[in-house]
Image 1 (cartoon, helix red, strand yellow):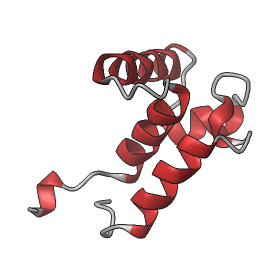
Image 2 (cartoon, helix red, strand yellow):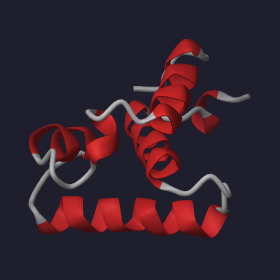
Image 3 (cartoon, helix red, strand yellow):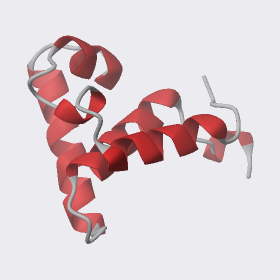
Image 4 (cartoon, one colour):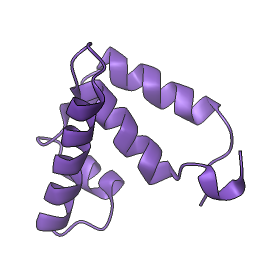
Length: 86
């Protein structure tokens, strides 16, 4: 894997949120739609990052704080993997 193909911490967070919010069917289209909504809402509400948005507006995405097993699994796997690109 090249340095430029590694995911940033924001990309990993967005992927973990979309995975956690989606159904267990693991459908790409569903996860892509969820990620798209997250990015649109982040921008519409004036946040500079997904992290800031979901940390401060806890009512928009509950997976970061409610113990969602899918989110925790994906977030843990991402953070135990290769180092993040900054």
